[in-house]
Image (cartoon, rainbow, N blue to C red; front, side):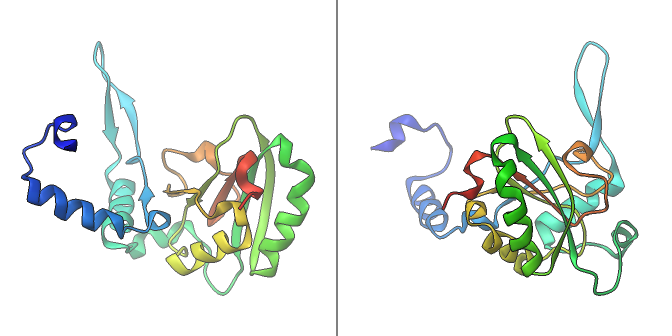
Length: 180
């Protein structure tokens, strides 16, 4: 029935198998990333990949592993996880309570900054992040339950989405961030 709307070389059986697989995918565990790089080209546009940081991103997304070479970006020891809060102006009065919730779960808020027209996201930056820690971040703020999860190493493509304080996470909180 739906096949008239889909153009694919997959067989009906393969589509059914894919649908059964997709129904069990936990959307909160899906990470996205743009491979670190910079634009290039004359008369055409393309993306020049920065190989070393791109390998770090691929290792995290595909292997759920970060190479030791990436440890140069992070602090060592048992320091609290550092979190930057970038938030919609409409949330300004709620930020102290959000920061307190994070601190109760052993996160240290290292900066707070207002952004315009933001969508709620969790951005992982360092090798200290794990699925368990990201789950703890989601648990600390109810509105992060369905937040988009992105991996963007410090010093790469999305540096503007950080506070530049060496944070492990940046939480971008849109107006929906305090809703269940």
